[in-house]
Length: 362
Image (cartoon, rainbow, N blue to C red; front, side, top):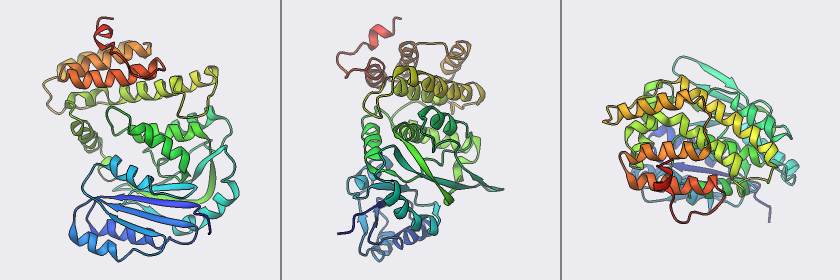
C-alpha cells in the first residue's frame, strides 16, 4: 500500500458557494499519496448535499454537528494518516502546482527529523491591494533565527497555513485543547511551536492565498478578537490586554514548556522568549485596543498604564498575578482557571492546590 504522505484537512462552517468551491478544488487533489478530509459542521442541508458529491477514494467528507473551530479541526486531525498535514481555511485558496509538488518534497525530506514542515510564498488579498510575502530564516537550522525571522514579519499570520509534520501538529493541538481559554492570537502560538520543533523547507512557489476579510480593518479585526473572548465568557475589557496576553503566554511557553518541543538549553531558550515578549509588548504599547463599552474599561485603562510603565520588566509570576486579578474583577472562576494553568507552566509542574489567592497579595 502506498503511504499517505500528505493529509489535507478542512474544517468547514461557512455555507456559501465560495467555501463549497474551495472544498471542490481540494477534493480534486486526493490521490494515492494525498488524502483530503473535510468535516462540515455548518448544519446547512444544501451544503451537505453538495459536499456529498465530492466524496471519492482518499477524499472523506464528514457531516458533523455544530461545534467550535478547535473541536472541528481536532476531530479531523485524529483521522489523518499522512506523514504531514496541511490545515486549510474553507475560504482561502491553494495553488494546484504547489500541492502537486508536496508529496515529492515529503518523500525527499520527510525522514529528516530536523524538518518540521514546508513553506513557500503566500499571497495576501485585501480590498484595495494584494501582496506576496515570505518568512525569513524559517529554513534555518538555528531555532533562534527561525523564531526571530517569523516575528520580523509584521503582517497577518499566514505561516499557520503551512504543511507540517503530523506528530508536531498533534502535539500542538493537544496543548491547545488543554488551554483554559482559546484566544484569537493562539494561531501565532501554534506557529511558534511549529518553529520550535524544526526547520521549514522552502518551496519556490506560490503556496497559499489568504483573503484578510474582517481582519483587514483595525476595528473589524478587534470585533473578531472580541468574538473569541465572548465565546469563553470573558468581559470585553480583556481586549485591552490582547497583546500583553500573547507576550506572557508565548514567552512563558518558550522559557518553561518541556513537552512541546526539543529540550533546548535555557541559555538558548531565554533570548528567544525575550524576543517574543518584546515583539508582543511593542504591539501592546503601540496599538489602541477597544473595550466595547465595558463597565470595566476604566480598570482596564489603569492596568494598561501600569503595565506600560513597567516596560516589560516583570516576572512571569507578577505578570500572571496582574492578568488573573484583572479577570477576577468580572469572574473569579475564570481567573482561577487561568491562573492555575499558567502557574503550572511558569513553575514547570502540574496544577495542584491553587495559589491564586496568595498571588493576589503579592
